[in-house]
Image 1 (tube, rainbow, N blue to C red):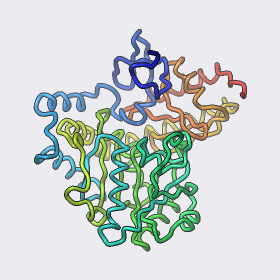
Image 2: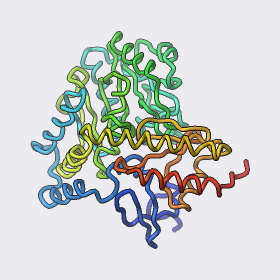
Image 3: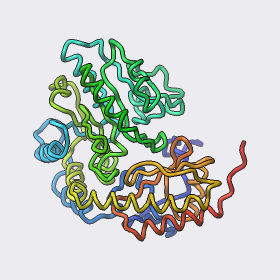
Image 4: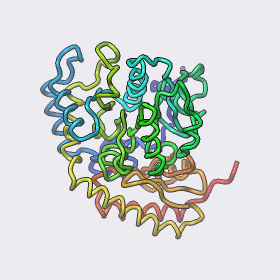
Length: 395
């Protein structure tokens, strides 16, 4: 037998964390890493945060799971808190971002079905997007690396260029149900949509009774310096998928919707065995206890400006490697002139954890609790690693 016990679908790096503390991870041999990947924007409170770990420990000793066959005081309280914080009137709790997006897609389709328009089932989606790894979410993208070998894909998606309102208008037709978009593309290279584009999508949805569906799985939950990225654009969606940072590391996601958008989501139309279990809700409440306030959001904004400024000051010293910085708050991307994945591997050897993205972008996704000293440490180590880096020869 040659296959590994863990199905070999990940090209796993030599980094093997066994412990985390604050913004640092530690390997099996005691190696120390500054974690500016945060589990791909998940560990927004870092590692071992006392509010989060205490809430999980207390709830685990009380009640972990009972299923959604019964009433859920924990789920109701958490959903009400999300409703109070957002545009939404109702929430479906999931275990992951992909599940949250799946629920969002179903909600958008079911809205039109409920109103006697079952032919309106297609969502306009955007090139280089990433919405998850289920058949539904890979069908919503044009990324061949996600789709290869999984045909036939699900119908109902039309992919157009990102940030191109004219292309959206041209793609609209009698079967269009709405638009599914990341306000800031993560996997696609930390690409924020323009304000004109997001406002244009909102206007098109309003004028044509369509659903504006936002995927804020990566850019939501305080990462941009606001609770949700769409707040930067002065709009609200009809439906929104969130996850990653929502549980601070505990598997959790949510699909939020207005009462209008959720009109078709009645008893029997959707479900989840684990979604919204008491343990997940305790983690979610703990995260909100820390991040859902003006002081914390101001901290994220300040750290984002500090980090971006330091990177922009450093980049001219290594202009053979780097082009510039993009993103918002603490979801930043450094555009590289060569393969970002090779450079991510090099950074690990210097004790830095980052994440590669499309368009040769280095994703910088630190825990939202970083301080000035961590920014300085990151930029110093990044600069030192850049000085020692030899760009691989072209194949």
